[in-house]
Amino acid sequence: MGNFDKSSTMQSYWNEDGGRKWADNIDIVESMIAPISDRLFEKISASEGDKVLDIGCGGGITSIKLANLVAATGTVIGIDVSEIILNIARSRGAGIDNLQFIHRDAASARLGDNKFDIITSRFGVMFFDNPVLAFKNLHAALKPTGRMVFLCWRKIQENPSMAEPARIALEVLSPPAATDIPDPTAPGPFSLSNPAHLTTILQASGFNNIELQEVDASLPMGNIDEAIAYSMKMGPASQIIKSATGQKKEKVAAAIRKTFRKYTAHNRVKVPSATWIVSATK
Image 1: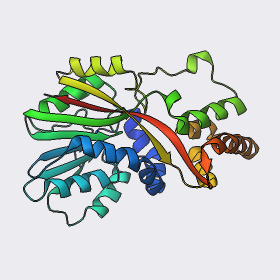
Image 2 (image 1 turned 90 degrees about the horizontal axis):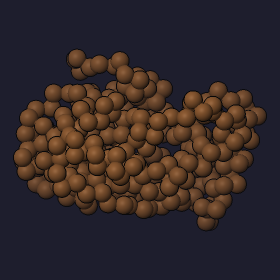
Image 3 (image 1 turned 135 degrees about the vertical axis):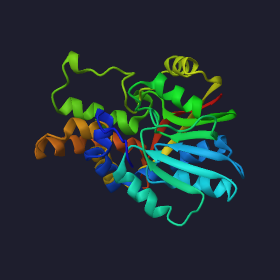
Image 4 (image 1 turned 90 degrees about the vertical axis):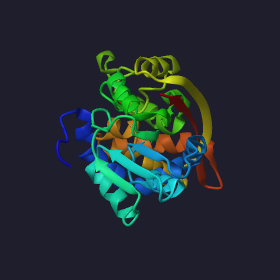
């Protein structure tokens, strides 16, 4: 799509290594987050005729489900910064007449004014460089009667599928210097984890009736070997160990195995997760 700005770090990441990793592991990721996705859809409560924007639509599984719910009289636009992942979405959604996928950054794209009944996202709104400006753009795109409903992570410490491998990787490898400790509100998976910070952003963007619902669910990560492999390929730990030697990686894997055993029954790993389902009106 034209006029797409790939200048930001996040956009580069999702159109290069990050996008390729996500695409390679998309089936694992989607099956893992399916339990919380179901909770999101209950809250979205899309109905026939709705016009929906799905932000960070990824492989399109949420957009396709929404297109079925809104039926022929409704429309769904799935928007994502990653062309690599959108190629999967377009393949999956081929032939669905009320569904369109576009390669844009929802933070700054011209989405139209007062256009959508529902704006939603499954883990796609935590990466905005300037969240207030981004959410103002989404606010403008909602109809006066419109709703926004999205899913985002709570604190990393409450999400051991990511926190534990990252902690282990840091212990095995050299820990970051104090100057390398990231800003918890910087663009990334946990940028909206603080409820006060999140609420302030949405209020500053013009939203009303802001509600944060805690959702706790177990994430199925497959057998223990699959869970370890996933943890070392995706998420915070993968960034820490990407330049480590083979021996160091083996040491990290062994320590993750020991930690994940407490979440394992019958050789299936199920790890607790903590998310927000956020809803607001225009």
